[in-house]
Image (cartoon, rainbow, N blue to C red):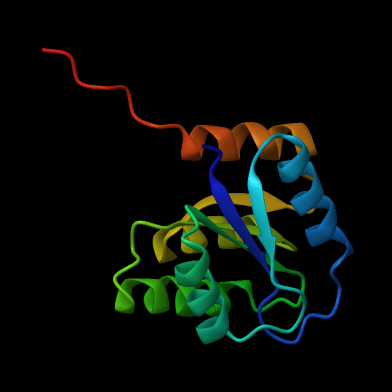
Length: 135
C-alpha cells in the first residue's frame, strides 16, 4: 500500500503552483496524495492529517512564516497524539533556518531549488518500512 501524504498550504500564502507540482510528482511516483488547498489553519491541517491517516504532512510555505508554522504544526500533531506523522517543509527556506526547522521537528527540508527527483527520493526514504526483524 502506498504511503499517504498530505500537502498543505498553511497561513495566508496564496501561491499554490509549487505545492501542486510537488503533489503531482509524488502522485506520479506512486504515493497517495491529499492536497488541502491554500490558506489553511494549522488546526485544520492536523484534523485532515488525522482523518486521512497520512504518514507524512508536507507544508508548502512561501510566506516567510516557515519557522512559526512548522513549530505550530509539529506541536499540534504531538497534542493530537500524532507525533509519529513525519513533517516535511518546502518553499522559501533560507539556509540559516534549516537547523532551526530540524530542531522544530521537520524531518526533511526542500528549498524552492530542490529537484523533483530528489524530493521523491527523500520522501521514499522517509516512508520506507523498516526491515523486518529476523531471529
